[in-house]
Image (cartoon, rainbow, N blue to C red; front, side):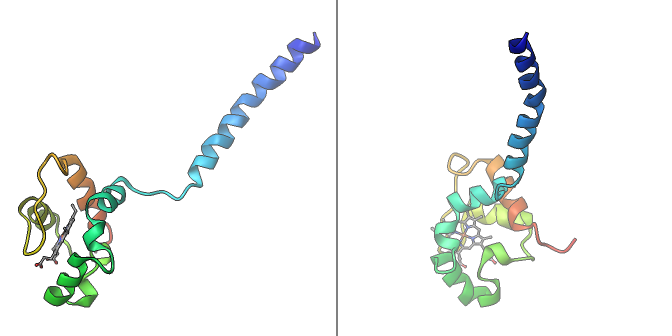
Length: 115
Ligand code: HEC
């Protein structure tokens, strides 16, 4: 009898345990998929001291040189730059950056644009 009761108590606690796990997951620092792909494919050149940032500082100005802070990037422009390259930036094939990954990156880079 005591064993059965113990089992029931445990069973009754399961949802609580599960809630705790879900809640713990909610508290993680979340990285959106686009940010993760950007970190993987683009950040080497587009971090503060990267070649992309440095060349952009010369071409479009220091205030627009850091892509992650931009609020004026247009999706089609980002797609064209990534697929065709621009100046010192190499293009990326669909094997290197898939269309789905590129869409996530576009979402990430245009997230702060005024709507
Ligand atoms: C090997 C280095 C390198 C990598 C990797 C790289 N870029 Fe670039 N990127 C550059 C350089 C250099 C420029 C500036 C080219 C110029 O103006 O001559 C640039 C420019 C750009 C521009 C143009 C911004 C403007 O205002 O004209 C965009 C958009 C861009 N990169 C997006 C990306 C994205 C998205 C990725 C990842 C998929 C990426 N880049 C990866 C080097 C890189």
